[in-house]
Amino acid sequence: MSRVDGTLTESIASGRRRVLDLATALPAWAAVLLVWTGGRIVSTFWLALAYPLIGRALPENAIWGNDHGFFTFLTAWDGQYYEQISVHGYPSTLPLDAAGHVAQNAWAFLPAFPFTIRMLTASTGVPFAVGAPAIALLAGLIATYLLHRLVRDRAGFAAALWAVFFFTCGPLSFLLQVGYAESMFLALTFGSLVALERRRYGLLTALGVVAAFTRPGALAIPLVLGVVAVTRWVRARREAGAHGADGVRSLDAFPVAERVRVVAAGVVMVVAGFAWPLIAAHATGSPNAYLETEMSWWVNFIGRVDFTPLTPWFLIAARWLGVGGVLIVVFLLVAYPVWLLRRSTRQLGSTTVLYAAAYALYIFAVSLPMASTPRLLMPLAPLFGSPELVAKPWMRWTLVVGAVLGQPVLVAVLWLLGPP
Image (cartoon, rainbow, N blue to C red):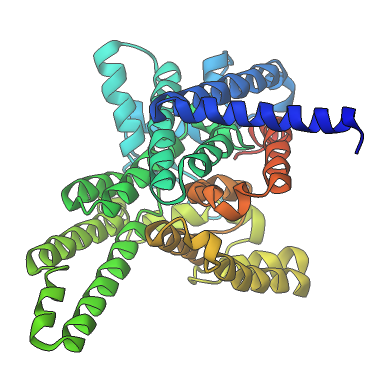
């Protein structure tokens, strides 16, 4: 290597160290705020560029009515259902299509996000189109900080900051500032995982219950709690048996009082997780109101089918890709657990890894892969802090390029042409 090349390499390395030193010197909240702000500026830029195309690109069902202002643009697609709920509540009668089947309607969307906006609009007078992105923006900031805290506690500051970057600047990060419930659900989910790590079961219960009424998938939280509790109980029993009378102290690591709190928290969150279908059934008089409403979104992809858990991914893979598609699904079912069990991934901590497994199991068991699937996977963002990803420069920069180039593509494809 020539002296010039060596000097250039040293200069680049020195510059990288200075940037890292500067980020490390900042308080955690300041570093998170800086990255989050940069991400929101970039997302606003891409959304603003896409906005003039609204009249030509957006299908008629993307925005109801004639108001196509920028804030209405930010509450398109599912945001309109949240507005309907926030302003008018839920329908008491399920709408039917021409064939007499349940049509798409507001019962597919849970109430915590739109009712929070209702409280804001009622107390301040701001319209839904302003209140929804504002709530999403604030919740996204909280989610970002909690994500950093969750990853930092296990994998360190640098890994946590990279996870924050990919979360706030990635291809789907524009969803953190539009009228969707994603930001709120992510804040509640990451908060629940932090509370579980610190064994603050009252806070965990409160966050888990609200999450259960924000978006589907909150049942993964009590599942993780159950696995953690059983593991601790078995370990305490084994240590107690191995040490005889002195081993009684081992059980003190998981005392009866704490076990009671764990069971109570788990039961309450499970009940909350199953409550919405029962509420929908009671309010509409239709026993399967929620399930039939959810499946009304499936018709355009695989036709009208009966719901069977653990089959949706196979159904759509076979429908569109044949045997090859089924083999792809099988590969994912093998590769994902293998990756979670790698030593590098496990450095994120058992809580994060268990949640990544439980939530992915939920997505696989009950959801149909479609345009909305990438955003449904956003709660897996802590995995971006895996040391295996952020320790390798080529991997980091591959992800950076994907984040920078992916967001304008997905804003155009998902927000302009089809529902994310």
